[in-house]
Image (cartoon, rainbow, N blue to C red):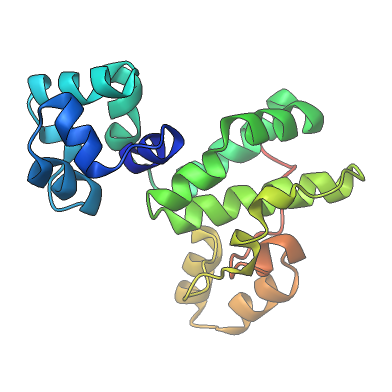
Length: 189
């Protein structure tokens, strides 16, 4: 959870956190606005904020230390996770971890919407009602269509845009809704 989310959860304002933690208000404001990178603050600052909020330093810093892999690797990892865990366990873990919201808050929109599309697709396949927690995100759409790397390579080598058009027409609707082209999530090696 990001700092502001924890603050909101505990009914802390920036001013209150500053007073309780003895961290300057401007530092807290800069962290919340993204002007200062929280992961680059001194250990003392992180410790003071974590103590004031009653959370561990690790849980406070983890969202800021997430490393982003390539989108193709991310998609592959999600498909393998579904295959390994099974549909029901995937749905449960995805909802419990709330990575969809976490990725969205990190502004990793492609990952967030891909995971939401997968959740919606797997839910539909298993006749499980959609979780309404993400209805606001279901209204979002990526600005540019994301095609699988293989489709882009084939279209480029063949100099044939119809390859992309065909992939788009065969895409799973739950993914297409977010401007993501995905046609196969089950047949992974």
